[in-house]
Image (cartoon, rainbow, N blue to C red; front, side, top):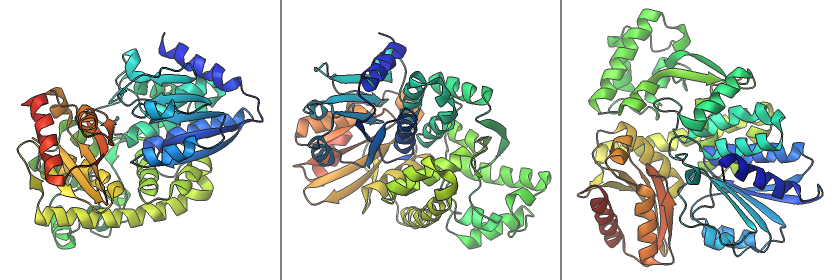
Length: 446
């Protein structure tokens, strides 16, 4: 069966339910999961269905167990579900899983429709996001849903699948969005979050300028050396000022061994849509921040009615960025813990740690080893981890690292992508868990 046929089967299953049916939508709480859910909710509403959406954070199991006890006739899982098939199959109704994460197992029940990109030779790490698959499903339901393509692009950007250029189905969705004038590609420029250049540098977390972000004195010094007025906005700079500033910042990033695909995005193409005042990368950041701050309702509402909710969402993102920046500066000052084959740090919140692990991996000068965030909560340890594409090309698969350890420990969950994954582990001491992770990595890449 092709991906197209699988999506049509899922569509036919959904549309077999009368319009009076309440459709349950379950998705992930990051930017990709939020946009995935928004695409489904909008397309369901257009078909005349009411919906009830929930965005979940790790660990999924407890919340899923509660949801599966609800009296639902059908549940759609997006950007998740491939690692929870055993639990989902306990549900008595129909289930549709639309996901791009590596599957741990396949459904055995005919009532569970499983649409996973990896099973059709489409790499869920780089070639399609959860939002991209949800968009393809929405387009199979109705071609008019092409206007939701900007959400699919936002989801892919949220999962960093734009780094190095869009590929696979992501590229096809982008082409379709541009062809239908939903998305416009603008020329290369810096990613802008601050109102002045001083604010831009001192408050920047992605990119994170090692030795500069969070340090106003150093930021002023660099701007002075670049002959740039610190109170000027980026758009007010002359082309000569921009070139000089770009060169100095790129050199700083190169000294931290920033990977080529990440460096390329520093001064990269920007994707915009008429309904947004910001580009789609900024939009994805705002959605992700809302999810990580527990404001999933605002995140989803922003996608459903951007004009009404985006200002509020940006305020949440501003506070989130302050929290992340403080932690990054602390890690830069105090250092990270290191084992033979991994770098790790402790985070009070797993949702914050997942973001920080990605930034540390991309912008701190530690590239030979994957980065792990560790959160200890009562009887469980929550882990979020990130790698570079170079490490993945050498054979590293973080999704398998997490799932293998979860299988060994029992009463645990783990999985994800080769380049980014996570898990919740019980019945193990932290040092023992770190040693187990270290050993799994050794088996993969020596």
